[in-house]
Length: 101
Image (cartoon, rainbow, N blue to C red; front, side):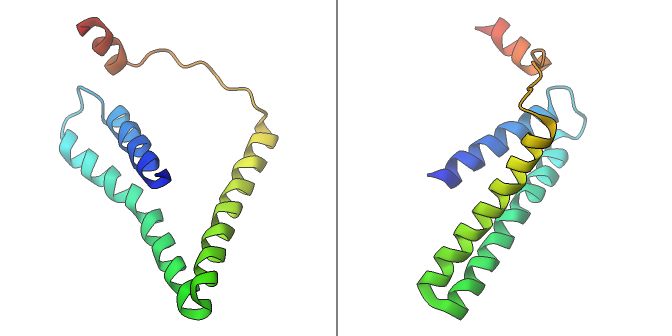
């Protein structure tokens, strides 16, 4: 389920980056989608390595360790820059979508 939510969010982010009036939108979408796939492939490789060396427990601990590492990096960034989140103005795509309704 988490992977599906992550794919949905990454697809939404890619569509937002590509925008409505981008030239060669399909090429940009494909390149960004390929870039998003790289971390997934690396994690599959690491999980496989953990499984081949330590069995099922190695797979689970490798996955948990990577998740904790990413959580730690995100927590350090939030502590360094604070939890102030800027309010971003509506994008052009969202503004045009709301006028269609």
